[in-house]
Length: 472
Image 1 (cartoon, rainbow, N blue to C red):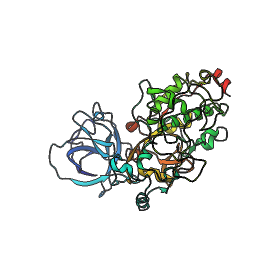
Image 2: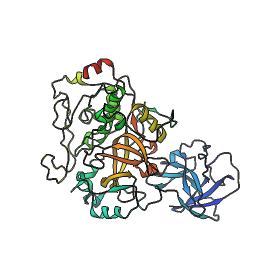
Image 3: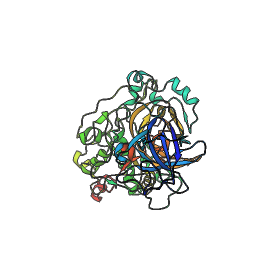
Image 4: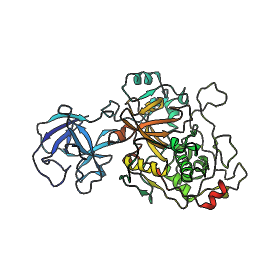
């Protein structure tokens, strides 16, 4: 993508209006959309100007750069036309992300500039197309993909993962069961302003892993699009334990919301909504449950761990989408179903808006449920800080648990637990670049972006004492 600029010395009451531009702004066009233009203030040591036109909800971001002069520019980052001013539109520059632009009114001399990406520099795979048609019949991790990743400069290592050995892209898509969207009505939106000084690195595994082993536990969603339930009940389980300083170690069942929540959560193995699972926990409660075959708790996961084309007789092969097991409403450990329900009636459910607020939330209250768009190269992740390389298309939405953050070789990242068993990736976990600017929020699939997927989901987990006394 190319950005064409010319400074015009005309003053305006606010920034980012339709040209003519203010004295501290630059007039520009996207080369791929030569009929559109915008006014972009130069980025300085301070944040981008926040005096936006009336009705604008797009956020000013320092996302453009002149490659010749090295100057950087602010623009209104958007995902839809509704976020821009009247008469403006959201012109896409990467995947679903764009900048607000206006129709061109005149032809003027222009100079070339490009999108500002360092880790985020432009890659040929944007915008990433949805994997479809004959592509679905291709191997999930092909030799061609691995060869392409060999030649790409990146911040992570790749290789074959047994999780996807012998699978097609269609089989892999089954794992992406998060229905991405905005906040559920009634949820509380957190602010983007942190309340205190946070450490540079923070990981709940090292903070409370000894007292709360559930934080380190990696579960397996099998061949079911139930990631939305796993990412949710894992965060709920960990928050209960952290809140009680390790006293309440109640492993919530992923099968309960998958099979019993119904349409308010989604469609079981065919995909669901993390916020729905959190509301289910608050309103109807969730029973305890272990992994497949563990009958020591109320409702174990009903689908076996997945390995594909394996010679290991302990783990079955599984391809395609597993059917959603029916809600049984009887406990495997002889508990009464209704009595086994743990309700977060005194708690709440909300989205977290912004990278800074997300770090504050994790630090103060525990892990959260995150969602992001999975690209084909992610399947081959082994270690390091993942960021989309442009190799492979979009597979779908995936829900996970974010347990901390850090920085590696100047690259900021989130620490994330997946639900593809501990043989995938880095012992079941992965690091992914933090969205410290608009384009990184695309490069990481929108994992910390409320604009792209409604934002990470969490809640105040407060269990009445009469319930905790029963389950401890």
